[in-house]
Length: 106
Image (tube, rainbow, N blue to C red; front, side):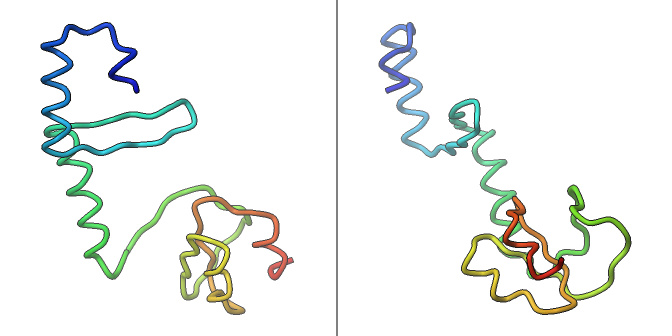
């Protein structure tokens, strides 16, 4: 749809379509959608593949919801059904902390 709304020439549109046929990465953000092709797409895919292969992560960064220091087993929760994996004493890591995630820690 984005290509159809574009004011690019037919030649430019054809080149863009051919580039996407070789492979692309679509990134959905709050402000819209970004489509990467070529080397930019390969770089993103390589990074994702490296993360998938890595079984141990030595360092993470982000914003802490609760202050202080903690030591324990880190449990990454990607969605609500995985919340049951968190046990007493675990460190909860999630993309977005929802209020019901913290009820067990209050």
